[in-house]
Image (cartoon, rainbow over all chains, first blue to last red; front, side, top):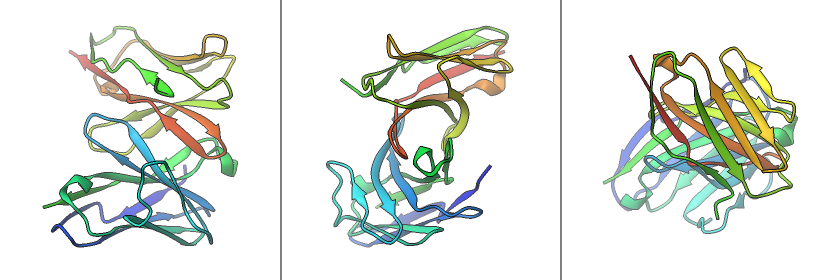
Length: 117
Length: 109
């Protein structure tokens, strides 16, 4: 199947700093990528849909100025958590593929565990 | 009401047992459904797509009941390696998925 990578896999940062997470589709082009966050023992919550060459579409309740998304190419989307706070600590996962791109499944990146101290 | 609801479990079963999970969805316009498996601290991996006619892959059988708006996953002859969280997923709009909170399965020797 297709491969999606994420970097970094784990990051610890201090409150007030910004963290950038990269999501890459390694062997296919993705006009659309998705960013999720997952809290312990909870399922994935869609944060936003990243659209190549245009603005991201954010889900209700997700602050677009807090979570900056850039999808500059067909293989790379980035999520920047700005002015991070401890409550932003979570597992962030990206995905690409899916029904809208003619691919039956979504391919998930391995996730990034963010800890804000 | 959640869009996708699952019994969180946990389901604790002995090796060799048959276990079934159900998942209900609220949007009758949902187009496609999937079961994903997620191991602790890992990303979800696709287990099965769910078709109206049912889908079987080895020990796993998935079924969709549109009239009652639920999806099921049956695991036969459980293995220790089946221990994981199983996520029910619906696609309502192109490329946008809604996940259930997951059902945790523990298979014990």
